[in-house]
Length: 371
Image 1 (cartoon, rainbow, N blue to C red):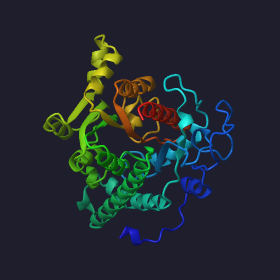
Image 2: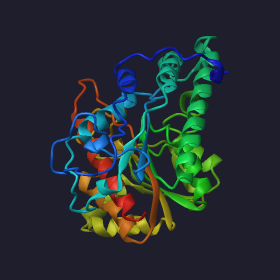
Image 3: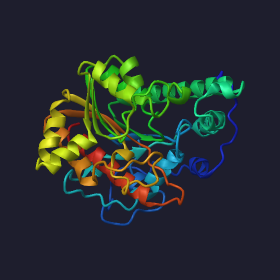
């Protein structure tokens, strides 16, 4: 079993950051903190000095991307976002001063680096075979190992999220690929039964065990809708890449899944409908308590060229922020969120982290407005 494995020292840039404790910070409260000054050495995310106890918002990084089927790199998402966050101005005209309530990015579980490396190694031959396990007799055991590790990641994220919610924290998951928030969504659904999910994504993520991986990044919402009864409704936005079976799954949900396809939204705008009206219609589909799951590829890929599976189309930065803001302005409560699939791309472009850090600050600000 995975729990019995002795985890060796992790390797790579992310592991080095873990050893140096670069994410976290326990410098203390906001006394004498200047939000207009440059971020100081040793401070936490967004250059903040607050530790976990003093922070209302606790971010859980999950650097895991073993099931990514096209282009990996999302495991570096928390690193990219953390580094870029030091350049974010802390006063926001839409959400005010969210930093004042304290924002803390935890250290990832050290074992995650090893789990990701092992799961990647086991997943690679399966991905190369397009999920056809018959081409090599070793592939079924590789698949079993990946699925077991993914289940272990899910349980870890669930336990940590549940503990933080019990302590009254506003929790956000920072991926990693889009498989990683499953455990968090389970914890939120237990804490807030009847919760709805606002899912911003290029993909429907409703594939059953894509390429054989039970907890594939392409299966996150299928698993949520099949396994988590506490989720009352899934409202999807920006969807523009999906299979016929996924469409059948949506139609068979009898309204439990409401998908606002990207092309339909574009055609409405071509006909003169404002995005404000579109956003209001989307928000009407949500119950009073809302969890936001934002895959960065739901945005225009010009904003996230490094993401694992970019697709033309999508929301602009301001449209995404406006939509999340409409949830808050409607009187609904944003109970938590995740941000996934931020990745450096083949040229390690910092632009992806810059956009990721800024959309994360918007998610935090709008969530705090309802907290």
